[in-house]
Length: 299
Image (cartoon, rainbow, N blue to C red):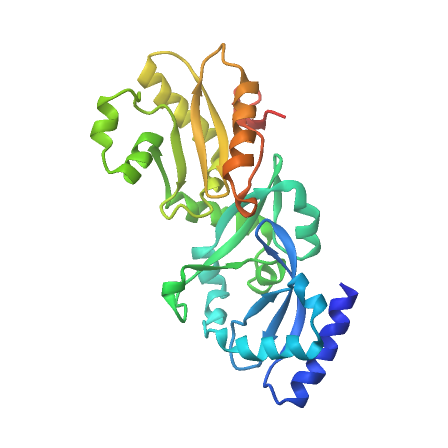
């Protein structure tokens, strides 16, 4: 980190001598499931700045070469009215929750990111950002920090309450067969063949982005699906949550004699083979403890 700070000072001297019109600042930013170090370009003109995550290849380049790269790419900024996004009323109406693996919780707190612990996970908050300079590049969101909440006169507890109310309006669920049929475009044929209806449910939000936060609905979530499973089979069944990724969870019916260890092995295998590191959520599975009336992680 010290080396990057020293280099930022040298780069700023170079950029000033070249009349670049911007300077760099070193920041630690949560991205792709971990804290990454980045140079942020600021010029006083835009309120949303280009961010360049520190490429280890830069160690082998001279300060002049890195300055050349930054000047060439500084035009990637966009002018988003972030000031409007951070007003209290807008924040309360649009803040959303997301869940990530909890092993980095202490790093998140050190970086000033608003967060809380939930089982073996961490709950963060984000604001969807509209009005990108180039919408074709995709959607954008803003990480909510403790500083942002403080400026809006909110604490983390208030942020959680608002985020859960907002998320409740967009949470969605469908049988996994229906989701797969969306890829094959032949749900009727799938139903008529060998796949039993509703063998597993996918729960997310309508955009399938950070939808695993549905797990935070706890007792309501589990009781809803246990009722569905009872209607299907005519018998009591436990609902298990399998963490597919940060974007969705899978809910499966569990018979009394089912081995929960088999589900654990399945989740780990899928994570190892199919889930990108940046979207990894957990190798655990989750259930509702009806005696204690609380959601639990199996291990």
